[in-house]
Image (cartoon, rainbow, N blue to C red; front, side, top):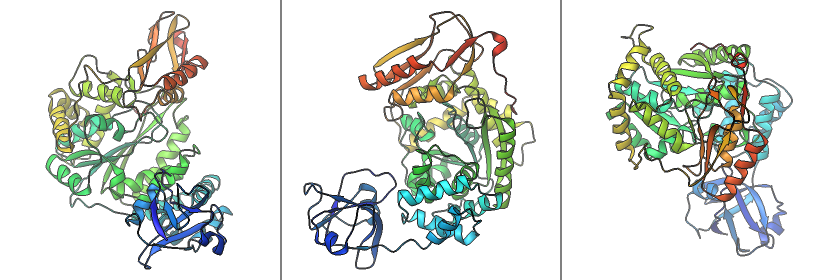
Length: 510
């Protein structure tokens, strides 16, 4: 059959399209959602989930169509002759069924599952079954170690041939928490190797890669990334081109829409990516708060112990820090707004958000203390000196230029053209801020796809407000997005106004 590229983004899933009148469909008895194998000469092949179509404009009767993901993975030109056949079930299906039954799996069984996932042998239904099974039948700490190790083994693993290779990561859930874009230039200016690969947002208003993309190119080849890191001691790149822990990228495609973020899966996802990127030392940020991912100190301490156990088994030095997650960090939520905040901190601008500056300095200080020549407790002062002296700004400018600079002025950021403000209904003090609701508003306004969309905060916890005073401004590029965001704000502002004594206190290590 002739191969056809079908311009449909199926996001991390291989999908094939055959016409209902195709002789192969009739002869083989193919049905929609069946698994088929598409290949050439027994050398190149992929497995894909079948969709049966009736429109010859999409796929002709003598053609097999492949979605964008599947077409790129097969790597053959359009029009190439390929064969289509029933696919054999993935070898690891037996292990998956045992996990669905609540059984404990061995290391080789996790490795088989992870390899099949990375090679796109699982359909979305089968992926969902694995995610739900490991969530419902919670993994014990040994199984989390087995899964993390398997995810690290499958895919590329970088080796920088030196120690320490440092990184900083946050488990997520806090809007505007763009500390990595400050930690990397500070730590790199200190001379430590910090090859930062980050993800794009899936359900949040911005990821580190989305925000860095406002300033520079982030889709770097492995070769270019290595050259930049060798020369400048750091980078801020998108991890999608590096093929680091590829099974994790596939699993995330079903975890996020299901809003499943089980502790075991979270630990395996984060640590496998860091190990694959060649990190030897990691500072991990666990925000704690009423609307954060982790909402009790007991839960935070349990998660910290699990991270420490798995990291130790895999030879990764880890420093887990529990931080204040009661509210967004910084003023901006959305790529352009967050890039503005980052650059103002780097330039020591008086308008820079103090909470973003202080948190980034504390995290950078913890990373710097991995340096064997730095005594414990001295990291914060070293990080502050690097930032205040302008060395961090110079390093960031060098990284941005090396990756491919884009024009950006934090004094006139390219924000979306339509906006509205949300005001305080009563006089008082800001006592609570809902991270989840503000993130949802920013996404409904168009972030992160529209870089200039998002939410700009005017008030933080403990700030006094008068009745009718603006709490935040919402930016959107399109009328429909503006309407969606406005309706969310009308249902709830995400702010609670009360007396100073009502401010929720959360103990953290900062």
